[in-house]
Length: 452
Image (cartoon, rainbow, N blue to C red; front, top):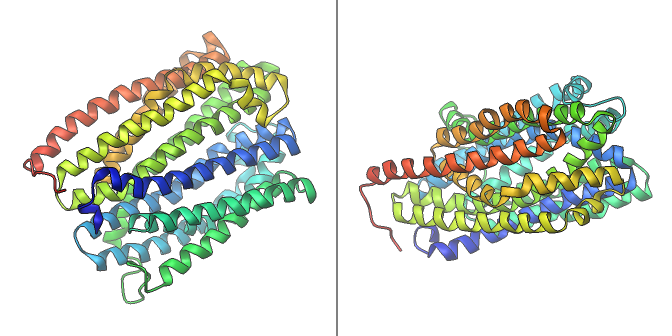
């Protein structure tokens, strides 16, 4: 495979550009969905959608637990020239996606109102949140298989096909969302239905790929379909992104409740403003994730093959790209905050609150790109404990205490400041951890020169 021989710059273009395009498309359709909901249903629907973010993080978390773990392991196996084991990963990921979607989706549906209330839903916002999440949860088997196999498609050497599946999902969603919301008058439920329809089209695409014998790695009835030793490795490596999403869920609950407490009668509007900020933040974060997804097979393959210099070169280039992306986000949100907010809503109060949030939260946003790349780097080379450590520290050790300390003294601005300070502290910790761990890993590889 070229993962061990082509220049790192060429490989990053080959693998990251399709992943970035897919990430941009996915982020854009999330933003477009929010715009359609805000414009077609109303400002309170935006607040209702924001209430669903914690549950959506959990939905994604239980999927990435499998998808990222499987993608990392399959890349390492391919680097070790072990095609049979890589095939075992595909089979096991498929089974685990089905199990997770049925168990998590079913339990969430049963206790949906209780979950949404715990996440901060009020009498005004819970009807919108319930209507949206009911459709999403019924569609989890389709979503999980699509996301899980799409990650494996990229990791096993098909970045362009993985990009096409993401673009296909986005295109169908963007076409159907305005029809369902404005023409059929299905409201927020229409946005959710469009999302599931888009993912179903991509589900068909990825299933066709892995059922074809022309694919390097494909479903094989004779290989293992549920092997505990492999499942354990998938869970171990996938635990980092799962915990990142799970703690993000926990933190968003704190954020929502903090905003409801300090904003008084404008509490629901403040939650909606956070929804706008969150959508904007995730747009740039998802682009950085696109970079890390492109880095993952390069890192996994070369780490598995013992080519340390190529691993560190990939990391350095990835950090600079990540910082460049989040710096662009900083420039846009500091210069045009009202333009961004007015795309989602015409509510003046919501725009005013979001403006303050953009100015404060995005103040140190450029360094966020580096922190994300470093965290995913450890995950990609099969050292999930470091990735988990960095994720939990940022979310729980830094952010939660700050949310407890600052908002009572500084109101809504204290909420935004808590997020900014925790990101900066997480960046410093990530840099220190990377330097210390890489010195140890370099000794492990006995300074093996990079192969070009």
